[in-house]
Image 1 (cartoon, rainbow over the protein chains, first blue to last red):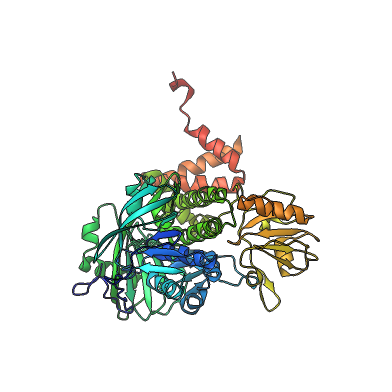
Image 2: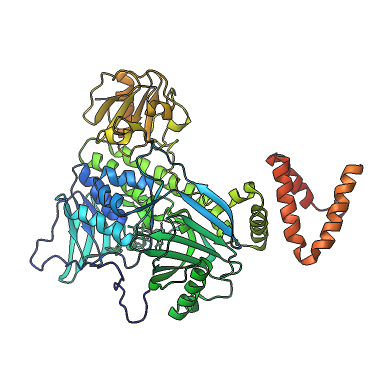
Length: 533
Length: 60
Ligand SMILES: Cc1cc2nc3c(=O)[nH]c(=O)nc-3n(C[C@H](O)[C@H](O)[C@H](O)COP(=O)(O)OP(=O)(O)OC[C@H]3O[C@@H](n4cnc5c(N)ncnc54)[C@H](O)[C@@H]3O)c2cc1C
């Protein structure tokens, strides 16, 4: 919502572009192998990942512009790696505000300062703040420059139907309705996914009681980019407040509503202004501020049982809805997009068997369930659902005023990438590495030469040999030789002569203490669900 | 058991000092801090579960 007199897209600092529907006489058919529904951040990332694999797609979007408010603002390190792999990270690095720490206050007194893991071996910081409009605008710049992606704005999917070897969709634009089909469909159409409904599928899980107003304000406020959490502050007794800095002097204020406050009342402009004023007074901001946008939010942990339905894959919010406190809604969606992108790209181009697609649900739904487990803990702490949870939360906060161990209970457990330990697309084997290089984990970065390990990796699979490069040839494989006493070898705990197989999504696909060319080729074939080349 | 008798006395007098209203918060804090000091989560859980069980005489 926006203040009285301003339209839905009337932002104080962002000019929404207006994208036209295809011209009346433009061709409407397509022979792209993949249709992507929804040009939100997840749909665009999937399109760019497919394009990086040389695969064309048709991207259809119902609206004529980007999402209306700033929504997701925290972009994680692992997402920056995804953006880097699709060649889109430069503007994100230029504009995103990096941060590494959080502060938690209870009744005005600091009880916890947490540091997220970070060091000179990491190319990217643990988290960056950037409004969702910019996230979408930067992705769009990359999509628009990519000839393999055809985007149709103001084009809504109104029906979907299975066909022999493909999916047909009915598209509706200002000029009329028409049907197109493709072998594969990615449903990136968001939390209220129409495709999900048309396929008769439902999200399952829990809705939590706690409700928050999230408001963006513009103000000149001198405080570093640090996540601030205020428990039981004077301005909202018994409630919780979160404060995040964003680019362009925009600040995100999230505040919890009390049991007696109705969402309708709380989202009235004068009530929002009064509530925000009280929060700003609490943090010592006395200068002017302008209200940009606000919304109301309640925590859910909802997911589909299965992310694949025949030739349709659900990615992003269409497959799962998670509470905002772990900042994983957007970040997990980007990982979905990359995961299906590298797999489907290889299937479509005949470089992998369709069996590879069977790993999509276990890997990405596994990641969602992991988020749920963490989110449940942080949500219970942020908005205790019952008298028992509230009493114990208050006890912990009260102890935390004087004892550090209790403050750790308030740690928000921010985003860490999920480890695909039991996936069919990893190959168990002899170790040769320390715990940082667990099977299925995302490869930790390391300072190598003038740059970083992540910059040396090939476009597909990479074999990291900690010793001389193994003599092994595969079209999808880059072989690197690294010293085991270098930064990467130390961080990964590599034994001399050991090797790691890194998948295109930077997750560790196999490990050997004594690799052989046959074993490496067999592992790649297993992951890709093909015969050994 | 003179030691536990001291603790018993301290809990009783402290409970009276904090008053009925703040007693739950005080007891929650005390339990959490004692469990932390015990440094044995398994045992702490077992003690908490045992304390929640009804008295044997009431089980019939
Ligand atoms: C008010 C609000 C606040 C949020 N705050 C946070 C936050 O603080 N942190 C966080 O991590 N996440 C937050 N989120 C969640 C975050 O915005 C989402 O996780 C993210 O946008 C998901 O991206 P997506 O691409 O999957 O879906 P969306 O961004 O929803 O994109 C889906 C796209 O599909 C299009 N579409 C829908 N139906 C059709 C159709 N039938 N045909 C064609 N196109 C269609 C839509 O127009 C839309 O552009 C918030 C969400 C909301 C709504």
